[in-house]
Image (cartoon, rainbow, N blue to C red; front, side, top):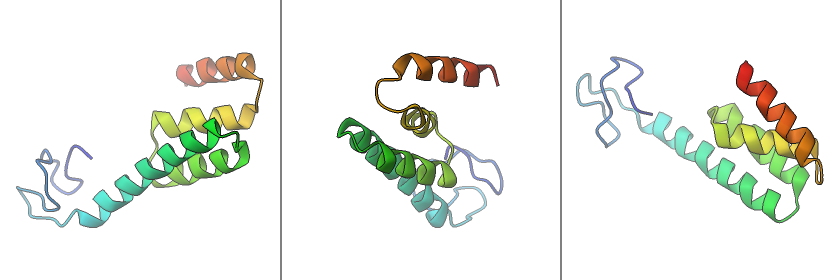
Length: 96
C-alpha cells in the first residue's frame, strides 16, 4: 500500500497514517498475507503441485490483486506442458 485509503497521504512506514492517524495495521497485514500466498504459489508451482499453487494464487488474489498471483493462477490453469497456451492467455489478459 503506497497511500492511505482514508486521506491518500503517502505511507512512510509504520501502521498509522502520518496525516490522518488512521490505523492501517489490519490492511498492512492483509497485504502481507497476500504477498506470502503469492510466494507460496510460486514454490508450489515449482514443486509440481499445480492444484495447490492455483489455490494459493486464488487466495492471494482474493486479498489483493497482484501481477505475480495472476500469472501463477493462469499458469496453473493451463497446466504443465502448456506454456505456449499460457503465453497466449497472458497476452490476451494484457489487452484488458
